[in-house]
Image (cartoon, rainbow, N blue to C red; front, side, top):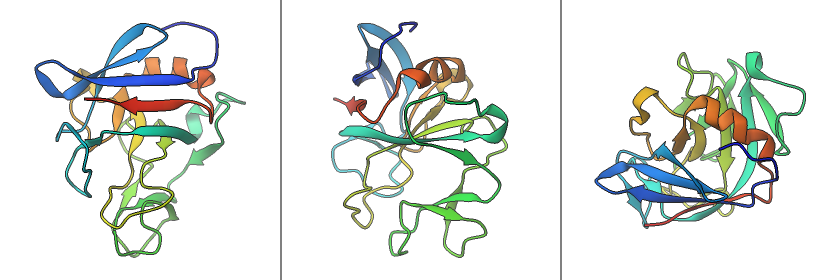
Length: 178
C-alpha cells in the first residue's frame, strides 16, 4: 500500500466467507482488515460487536506517546496517556466522547497494554449527532495478530496503518459496504 498522495476514499467490503474480516481498498490496492465480530450491520447498536454499514469521515487521530512523531498526519492529533478514556454508556452526557480518567461511567481505556491503540483514528460514527445506543468508540486502529475480530472497528496491521497515516486528512472518507 505504498503511494504518495492524500487519500480521499477508503472502501471496505466484507471478505467472502469471513464476516469479521474485510477487504480494504485504497487507490486500487487491496489489504485484508479486521472488522467487528458481529460482521457489518446497517442498524448498529451499542455492544453488538458490528462494524457499521456507513460512510464515515476521519476526524482525528490519537497516538501513544512513544509513537508520536512531529506531524505524522494531517488529522488533528492527540496523545494517548494513562488519563485518556472513551465513554461507552449511552445515558452518560459524555457518551461516545473522550473522557479524563478516572471516570465514573463505564469507558474504554485508550492506553491499552497491547498495541491495538498505538494509533487510533476516530471516525465520524455517532459523533454528530449522537444517538443513545447508536454505538461508541468506532475507530480505525491497529489489528491483533491474525486479524482477529474487533468490537466494531476497522483494524489494519500496525505497519500498514502507520504507512497510511501521513496520507490521511479530514477529507478522507472510509466507506463500509456490504
